[in-house]
Image (cartoon, rainbow over all chains, first blue to last red; front, side, top):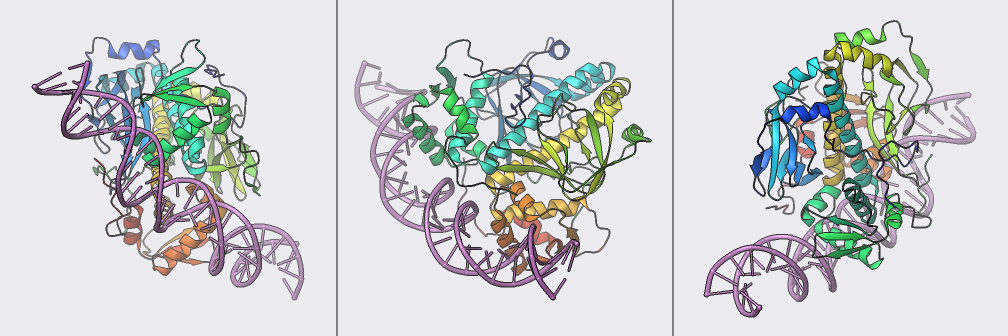
Amino acid sequence: MFSVPAAPRPDAENSELPERDARPSRDLQKLWEGNSPRLLKAGQHVFRAGDAQLDLYEVVSGTIRLYRNLKDGRRQVIGFLFTGDLIGVELQSQHFYSAQAIGAASLRSVPVTTVRELAFEQPRLLFELHATLARETAAAQDLMLAIGRADPEERLARFLVALARRNPQPGRDPVAIVLSMPRRDIADHLGLTIETVSRTLTKLVKQRLIKLSRRRSIQILDPDALEALMEGLPRVARRRRGRR
Amino acid sequence: MFSVPAAPRPDAENSELPERDARPSRDLQKLWEGNSPRLLKAGQHVFRAGDAQLDLYEVVSGTIRLYRNLKDGRRQVIGFLFTGDLIGVELQSQHFYSAQAIGAASLRSVPVTTVRELAFEQPRLLFELHATLARETAAAQDLMLAIGRADPEERLARFLVALARRNPQPGRDPVAIVLSMPRRDIADHLGLTIETVSRTLTKLVKQRLIKLSRRRSIQILDPDALEALMEGLPRVARRRRGRR
DNA sequence: CGCGTTCTTGACCCATATCAAAAAGCGTGG
DNA sequence: CCACGCTTTTTGATATGGGTCAAGAACGCG
């Protein structure tokens, strides 16, 4: 079963990837008080890589994708943000990735200058942001591992499990998840092509690990098998990855 | 020529990746005063993923590799740290990657509890650590882009340019860099095999972009061409990466 | 000088990208 | 509610880059 690991586990190898979102804390809550959300249309950018960072944002509704480009257009989707997630916790002079609404979305924001001032008086706030950034870094490293070393099946398994963990579905065991992003984004996130994403999903369906309906909604039928897949254990004795 | 970008440039697409290291600042300097360095032998671990984080470290000498594993041993090298770099700026309860000396190395450290106390009194210190962590995150995302979307030639180009930038060689234009890590580490860093790393390096040699001697030392003959390679521009019109 | 280790080179092959087309959704207007 | 057209996704056929396997060469160290 999925466990939503509130407290970290003392498990060295299978380090639970901390989620990138920082759900409301009292310190952060204060920040937005009385700020009316900004509405974004599908495809609209919050900011682009290289822009000066003016604000810290919180996603109120919708899904935001963060990404970087190579000059010739190849794209790496860094991550997806959902309701309650923060954007821009780095607090640097400029953004090093772009943020764009996938569907319609809404955000609220505070100027970074305000955040900085508050943080000076109230170190706990800064610690909080620091911890959020640390989770983000861990997630980035985790994705690196997936992209650099896992095959498509493992990458998809990781992606789906991570998504499921972020939407703690109370109770119901065949976990339902909604893909609020198109295949192209998933492909660019996992370093694959959309064709491979599609083929791999149908492969997972055939193995009865998941079930997909209407393209964007997925039921996880066998969470344990999926989690095993993440680490590549199923293939009984994967080639021989001997080292040193 | 290589420029060591002290101040960020307003260049949207070709965002300079901030270096992960934080060279000495007054605030940080104070931390280690009077701490005698810990010596590490080749291959020795500073800590492993999952260990509790007890200290914040600074590399005094040598090279440290940071990495994560999949259960079956596949490894992703997150990054390499050199003299002056900090390890453990996340300040979380446990490490989510392992840190290991490549050759002989030495570190000095401060307990995280001490860092936390100081940070409460002296917010600037925490801001400093936060900025370091932000650079680390940016580097991780940059590597993701390379691993997910670049071919071996581009990945090596990025790796070499990044290395050269971290060792600001005063003056001398054919920039000399030393690979303080074996091919296996480079491969595991870039998501390649050692064979591909080797072949790609000789390919770069044949193109007269670099020159390598005694396996571990490299001269960059044509910095501009290398930088162009990073973004994949040389191939005059790479397939067609059309997107939206 | 000799041995173990690291790196390079070569031959082969397979997983995944590419190219191409069909199918399934989805919104819109009648 | 259905028909139409556009977009997204799936499926199929083929090609190829980089992985795998296997020597051999270069190095470094005692």
